[in-house]
Length: 69
Image (cartoon, rainbow, N blue to C red; front, top):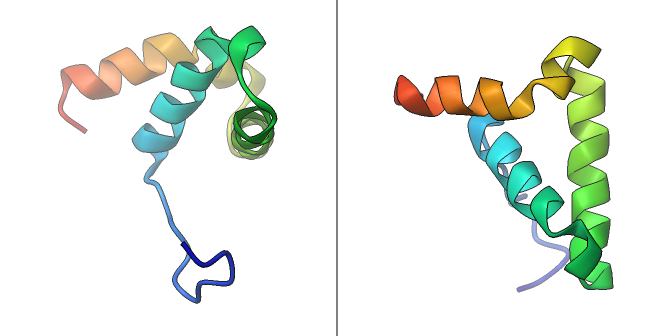
């Protein structure tokens, strides 16, 4: 993959939350690249979500999956 790609890889909100939760579960086992990814995703979620929603990410994710979003 070319890191200078003109087509950035994007995720929808549910995919972003899913990725964050997946990485966060085993945070202590992540290599430096995955830790950096976790940090970037976490920062983005902090910017986009209220504190209450961020603290309830598991519940928010489960509700969205339940309704197929």
